[in-house]
Image (cartoon, rainbow, N blue to C red; front, side, top):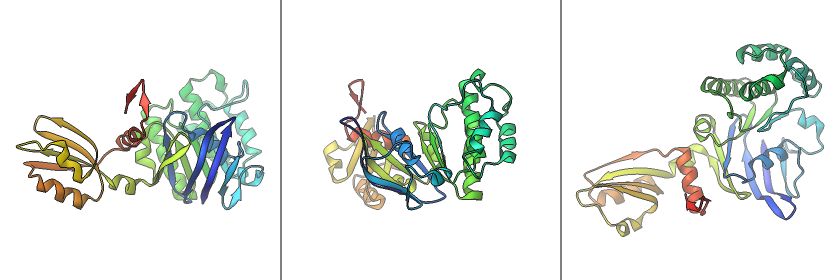
Length: 299
């Protein structure tokens, strides 16, 4: 299990992480989402033992990660911009990782080279951004880590490779109970993968929990009325957003669905239906409620 308790990290006077708390169960996929500069990459670097926190702590298997080489041998951190030795090919990078990761598998590397269509003797620096990302992923899965930390894992991958990455993650969770943390702006991909998510904003955890539970507390309702009710008529519900198109209202409402449906029925709709909000919609709603702006326009 991974646990963070009152975790803080500062760069100068700026708090990159401010009293962050969460737990991640073994063998699960945790999606780390958030606004730009929210602290996602900083958190991954602390989990990988690259940074040491200034306050609180983070533990993996009830051990602190920083200055713990044995534990780091179970963790693979793939940053948003993979780094390779100058002039190195995939085989040479594999030799380097084999010296650090006790479960490194040459057999698996051979399989990864095949499935990612990598020339293991080609210089990595001559490859495209997408192919370099595939080399980094091939090496990561060959290390067979217990904890796989991925920063913008889908960046630069085409749809076929993104699907392959998801299948490899699922395979490792099934076979080795690998714990995976993925920080990504590609919320559609995370929605397919994650058991739980954490939303960071300005170094603080805004939302944290199982994805199904988070989504089940927010409902998108489309309702058609003969006479469209005034907005103050909806004040008995926790309406996060409402838009009107002719005689139809589309509402995003937080709360118990039975209470919501009973309230809407009292407004005598001609027709209504309930839709499941996407992770992207939840992200926009949560950050919009915090006043997150782009180009001076509130989300």
